[in-house]
Length: 265
Ligand SMILES: NC(=O)c1ccc[n+]([C@@H]2O[C@H](COP(=O)([O-])OP(=O)(O)OC[C@H]3O[C@@H](n4cnc5c(N)ncnc54)[C@H](OP(=O)(O)O)[C@@H]3O)[C@@H](O)[C@H]2O)c1
Image (cartoon, helix red, strand yellow):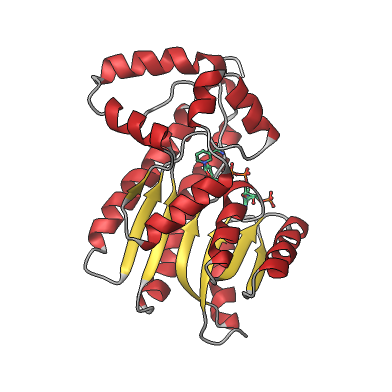
């Protein structure tokens, strides 16, 4: 039982950006509830954090795409008296290639993890967040939300859903104690696959590439400042701003050229 201390809940927290969020939040003295698929990797993350920061860390291993996983997690929080005041919906998956070359099962899994899980996490935890004097939701989108990428069409679509959902909910909750932000990073170096992806774009991608720790630092700082849309990195931010002035047909042709490298993945 954890009494009435505040916790920051982070999904997908055992690796990559989620793990970096966990370290960033711990460095700010926040207690953590970390969720991922595999318990051992989560436990290692917990040990690492606890050896550096004097915060409470609770781990919870679950496949969030299972039908009752989100409600089971919510029940667990109620039973353990874990009061969540910051919800970071970070977990997500993606793949590149021609639309028809990826299996329907993979798409269903991606839609579930990226969109259904985020929506249900927000739905179940919102009443708890509203009980706090000030609370935050940070949703993980991508730069691709505003720049639809050919050869990543479904992933791009899921990130656009997260982007639009977050902006709409932010306004709905504007007069409440809950602030909603959406973070839209460009490429982030999180795993060897990501490195291959970034390398396939040559120098261009390296210009906008960030490390997970940079995304986490900028993400949490801006979240706590109540910023709506967070685009980490000056180059990415400039690209997103400039592309708003580019006609859609021209923009899409340019993006198809740049991302043609994913076509036969
Ligand atoms: N990397 C990028 O370039 C980039 C750019 C923009 C946005 N993003 C977004 O940022 C988020 C994190 O990306 P990342 O690259 O850091 O991810 P990652 O390194 O692949 O880490 C994925 C995390 O999610 C967990 N996870 C995967 N499937 C799960 C499931 N079904 N149930 C519960 N947990 C699950 C994994 O747990 P296990 O370790 O136990 O498997 C792991 O902790 C995603 O939403 C992604 O779309 C990434």
